[in-house]
Length: 230
Image (spheres, helix red, strand yellow):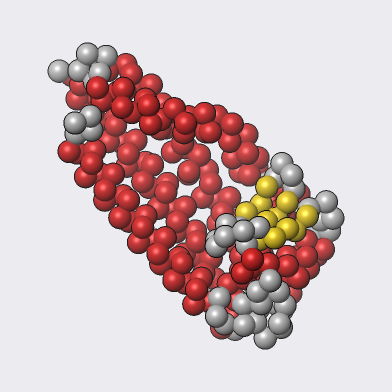
């Protein structure tokens, strides 16, 4: 077996934690997706109002596909909202639409952490594609060529760094979203509390990913250190 038992245990535990957080997020969004806003605004209308409020006129709002596939693309300056969010008038739709527009606001205001994350994307893409093969070779040659494991650690370190840089970007976008939703009167009272709860669990998926990346990085470093001592 290429991967030792320690790796399998660590990967399994972190996968289970990730699955729990993911399922919890889906449960929250399904719940808040059933609660309509008193304002009756759709996710598209909320997104447009938020962009207008910040004077952002060069960002398009488009309808995407799937569930929880919402994102902001800084290259094309596009806010893509899943059908349930784009057309929906629920607490979940409001939270997601405002959050993605929060990223557009970050871009417009040259938020430094977003700029750093965007600059790292090409390097991270290359690193992520190479990791699988590097990992296999690293474990196969650990006793004879530990330097391959060191290269693998660097590759994993890049993605771990990206995961941690993503955290302040996501938390800041949610902070901007919640502040605007409340100040604009789009949500209030229990609606605001629901939006905050939904976005908190969305943020936890990024926290889980970052911790998983860190744990795997530490494990690989321990294996490398053990190999070089022997």
